[in-house]
Length: 355
Image 1: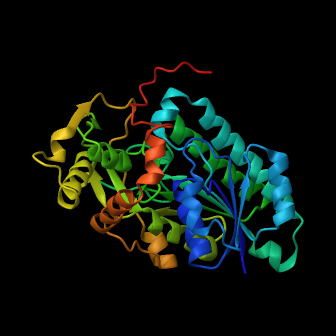
Image 2: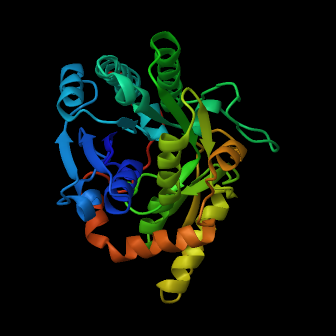
Image 3: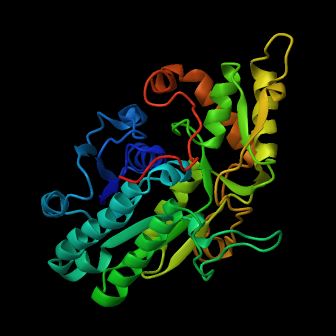
């Protein structure tokens, strides 16, 4: 049985990976998470008591703890998803993004390198360090074309710059030290257990509560949407079948403008939980755009499809229906967040002084 360390495993994408690996693929997983604001142990509830799952409350920036983790657990792979991830928060306070995404990745790489260097034979050959990144490192596209594995980096926000830096560190540790790595860059994820600062869950919950639905600028920014379980499957495919040192771009082949996404959320909620005498679209309010807001992202997924045989199972419509159904059925998961950690307020205006 494979043993995998998943960093950031109590977060949105990380918890989807852990649930897939432990609950469906019978992989032994050690989940590592610092439990910052966007993490939620409840997202791991389906596998929390599983005999093949263990949780470690730890910070990837703590090099000693990461080194001890490697030596104690002796994993076959590391799937590195731990990161500060919200663009708006990076605009208000970039320091945490630099510290976690860059310094934290360095500490984890060094711990993995020291551990891997002590392996021999088949164990050394089989070990993988999988770095999970974002399409935002590539910057903004025009109306045509798509990001691919060879697209030059041009990050626009403190978040994307910090992820670009971490990508380069992983490449350097492979080229300089031989650490066996794979890197993936994914498009916008959505689905169950997503912290409600992100577009789709924010729109769902605001609409359910009859609150305004803030749309940046004119709502014409385009993103490619990927259902989170499809992403989790893609990550496992790359980890187990991808070529060492290679990059794979992952997307849902579901480009939508932001306003189209918000309209779809509104219309679906009106269908499944109608509000008497009103349409959710009437709650839409256009607000001042985010500083440096990239116009369009799209992903060329030919490499992962042709080399590894992965394709998304969900369309945007089927994935959104599953997402809305999950938020409707799991009010306990998000109500505590809305009443405490984050109530839906606007972020990313760049008004917070650097610490």
